[in-house]
Image (cartoon, rainbow, N blue to C red):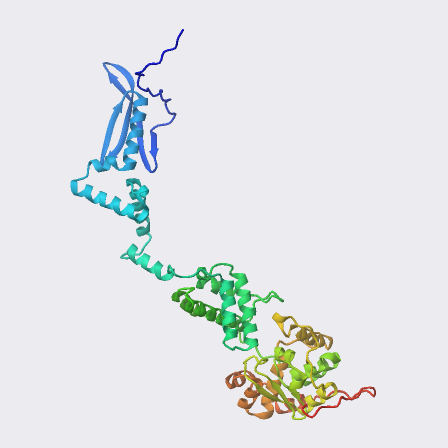
Length: 457
């Protein structure tokens, strides 16, 4: 038998739809929902199923009744599509409202493309607008919010990481002629900061920085760092962000907010100094290699890092002066420190024309740590409690008691007179000071021959 093909096929008839298990049944199209309710109808005493389609159009509820669920479902799908496209709402609009809607769609097409110029996209925008306005203080407009965001995040602002800006800042300070000590301090502090904040610099916030600063701990002891250390770290971070502001990497408001972070409260611990007897014990317990450096720390008051960088050519025994060069001084200012008679006695047996005063191998990022560890071990062998910066504190205290001249001691030590006056005055008596500067080395053994001291020391 030959098969035949109808040239006029029957129209497509949708398959019956299985009744849902729960009611009302919801037909969705995006955010549009149309509901179908199941009811019972009565005609001439007979019951039959009834399906009620419910939706809103032009601000009014619309109801349509069907005796066939398939037809009700198909009608609900069509209504949901029309509502998503705005056709049902537009049907109830006035002529002027239709013009406004068309203008809104045209503007939307210019901003987001013709493909997004639909009524459903307008619904999304209105929803976002409503949510944004609900979270704003009364009277603040979205235009004001947008302007504020533009100021905070200019379109022309380069995206730089914290590490990249730190590298630029350090290079800038080096090219500006800052001392190597200052640059080295920046590398240590800001290097630690950049490792903690691995993100774009304009994503850093003042609360984050404050929390990090307040939570800093000593990497060696795991205890909270001193307030002075936190203050120094904060000062360097503020300098970094001021540089970033000038380079247009961060908004000015961010740099200002960081500068307004309150510095951690300082705990004013008493200045710890060694007694003359304690110092004798430490010197006696120290090995010969570190004896000159230890004597300079105790009887000339140089900072540990300054002693670590000191060269013998800067120790002028014939003039009884130590030259602390600007490149080695913490304050980047050259200064002259007198050599007392007892210090000269400690240095003379070890004197050289040149060469490092420091016998230790120091790490570049922590100059002075190795020498400081040797000092601390000597104190432990002498059974003397270790005092942080105790040698310098002792020297300044006994020197003030000897000279009775705070500005002179400040000049020698590279401090301000205010710091000397407030921290070191009246810590030692005249008798204690005399005993301190009378500490002499033991008599030399017969097999030790003092070196010849050059004319220039």
